[in-house]
Length: 175
Image 1: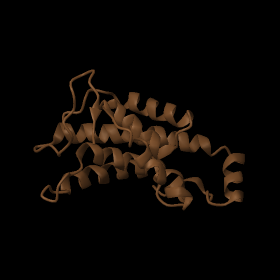
Image 2: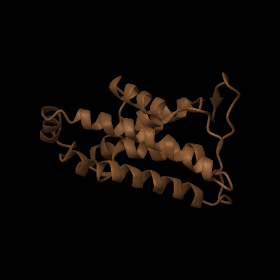
Image 3: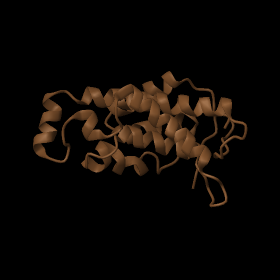
Image 4: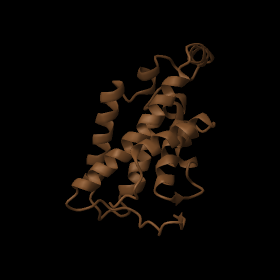
């Protein structure tokens, strides 16, 4: 995969910074990983928006987890039906296992203990300062996504497919 050198701590800090600046969890993780690889596109972070807040406040999968999966797939997903999915799936499953080990679950409702789709749930979220939990989920999802990709890169016999990265200083425009 040949990831551009970037420590997981830098990606984690950037994901946290983006989240605290007003982007939501999935958007922040995806954008932090993309930036770490110098991938710029007007679709990032907007393609992640519907995954935020537990998939549009439905209580589904944590947005930080969704953003990490989008980032992993951006870097090692397939671009044709002739490309096998196994390598990507292996990396995604590894990431999910690490996130579950760190936090116990990947489901937004389970992680927060409140529904985000009701005014009462949103009030409970604010009253109990659950934003800090979301900051931690976002930071760690960024860290775990990039470190899982780096581990896969180091151990890969056959590297997963990924976009060709530009020379340092150039921007990538993925159309």
